Length: 190
Image (tube, rainbow, N blue to C red):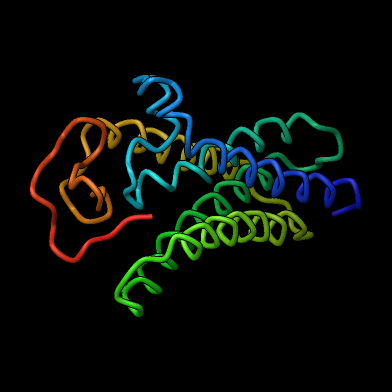
């Protein structure tokens, strides 16, 4: 990777960090708009908070794809998919690990987990993109399919989430945008 590409990655970390932070408030500010709900958290569940990383990261990747200096689009999309999944996985794993160890959630640590997830996402795609080996052409399709698949799950589970702890808002006991049911004992959210 050349200096121009490194600057793009740093710009990505900054963009996703700012956009994700602002996205936390969009649903309320939008008057609980159903379309906005697809892209931003509708409650305090861990799942919904993964949108803070996912959608800004995808937007930045789409913009970055059209910037000059990229040699291998297959490697690009495969690396971006791996980065997005790694960032989301880090946030969820970090949350459940620390909150399980402490027995409670701490807002400052939740916020830190988001920023560390952003760094993890871009760190992962950076390492993969700087590989000297070009990816097979199918890697681009697989990367795009992986990103699209998870995006569709975010859309679906906003309105029809599974009734498990990952999707539960610990403050209201609700799941997704509409359903409210009895809380699952011992759960917490970001």
